[in-house]
Length: 372
Image (cartoon, rainbow, N blue to C red; front, side, top):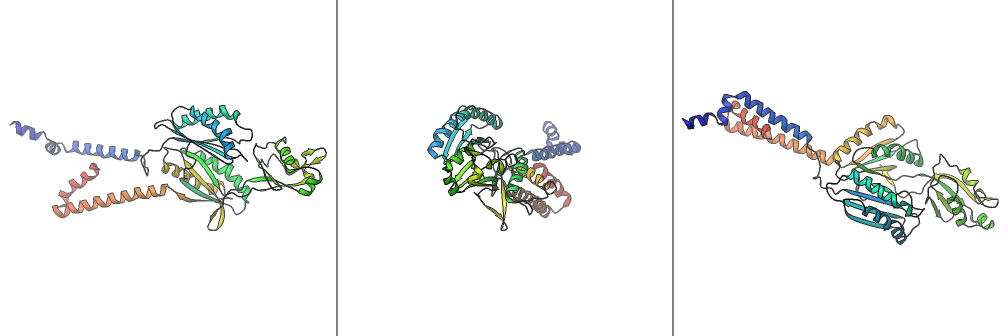
């Protein structure tokens, strides 16, 4: 009698006596599994990214030794005081310094970036005046872009297109959660060119150094380190909306001699340092770099949704996505889903082949989604 009572209380017996209860339990399992599947983060690889911040600075016309002693050493000391630092890698090159900081796993990257920014700001007064604005990004500076885009225009010239991309498009991409930095390639910023006539300069008893020094001390909003000298050409990177060629021409070098007396001044595109072409046409390339621990697919979805609105917002620019790392991940997920569906179909038909009855096949067939 005891064994018979136990048999009546086992799961198969309960399933026969209480079919509604078993159906509800299976539905709850299926719903919980579906909810967990939707909440599962989709990645190409597990989240093992090391939290990384890169601090970089430009020091025009400085040798690697000078950069290391006057810039890199100060930046290294600043980031070393940030809590949670695991490793520091510093690199000094001609005209630039870069410090890459790796943090211990689990640290909040936003908090670490804020602390790094505060620490660096405290040592900026110790840097040479010629050092341009120090930048801090929440990624490895050598990281590859997860999404690349090409920007072209039939109506805008190179320098105007560069300005539009830099002021209109780049900030939009930077506002996407998880984006660390946006890089531009093939851009040609608008610069002020001062072409010095060497004969006239000599006749006034002046040198290129005199002209460059006057430009550096001119009462205009010209960033330090923005003046470059090459042969008889001086290039000034300045805001064209607040500075005109006539303003530069009227600057007095010495006595009654003005810059306009020894040089011609005009706006034009900067010398290209990189070139990007799409289908044989010059374009500006945008690379979107993700933060450590951010999700590539989420960033890609945001960018694609944003690009869909650009035709209406920026009709003078043609914007095209040229590469997207998330495409491979999406294709892999679709392949897994297809393989899973095909497997279920094959299993059902195999059961039907051996059992020989649709009614007998339905029960094990319905158990497959629950088990998944």
